[in-house]
Image (tube, rainbow over all chains, first blue to last red; front, side, top):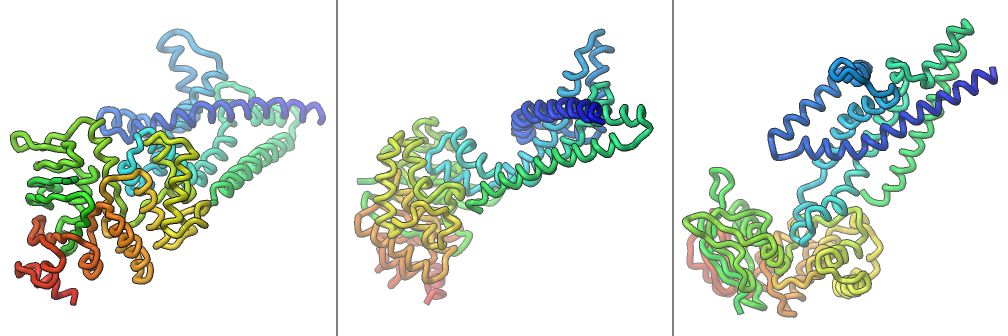
Length: 211
Length: 251
């Protein structure tokens, strides 16, 4: 039993790594995607739109398989499984985050831009000091949803053979003819997400000083 | 000294012609009120002046700098830097304040001073505190806009505009979002500014107020200046039947 828990904790670290690296890269990438989606240049906005449609319109599990196997068929070589998982998760989540960012940015009243313009703010300053702080506050609930989903989605990494928490639990179940390891994995996911929800609640509270 | 001069300004939104050739001048220390029915183009005129909208034709000069001129029937704007410096000569107070909700009152007033005028934090804060005292809001510097009444918010937004020391302060229906009590609060502030010889353009529906503070009044309708004159003349002795009809409705 102690051995099993140790194994599962090790696998949880893998899951957390996928989680953290996905956020690290997809959060900033999503900003670029959102900007592209809102671009006045129809070529850029259309290309980005197609990208978002594919990412949201096909299963993540399929995208992971594609990211891992496509380079092998096209270039005859592939990168390691873990990298493939991160690439797959990042491009998928960036699409979802981008749409949340876009919703937030477009919800800022035009008066905020007009006031900034009349006061002589540069475009960059307007974005970083007027728009972005207000966007962050508005998108927190939607982002919370997405980040919680990401914790659970890390289980999909096993499709291309990365031994994360759920895979390890399943293997253990098969070995022991018991559903207990899977149930324990469920508790692990729940604890991780309790932590995520709490963090988002705290952030929401922190930004509650204005409305 | 002439601070603003507009000549034959034309502006359309699609096929809708909103300004059909507006010309007027504004001298230093003068208070100009623009009155007229909704949809007459008053606000659009102010928005063209403050570069929130681009004119289609005509010329605008602010403090001797050409903002836009017309060559072969097309409006030609000055380069970015010139436009920026012209913009800072004009302050604008909005109908719905447009304060930055995530910044304190103080920060709302210091932000542009620090970022645009490159003043130090101490300098900017000193200016802001002085303006807040003038607006009777010295205790509110740490408050956020959502904690203030509409009248207080509008006074903060006036302070924010004044902090950049503009040559002209423009008001776009500054009291339309306020109840009568709060309206008088704002009108008093504008009146005090008029006494200090602040050059101002006020778009308003408050006739008594326009009559009281203005050196000159413009009556606009359907994208044109119908009548222009001293408040005593325009309000007591309107020459144009359209002006008469409009003013009659207010009595």
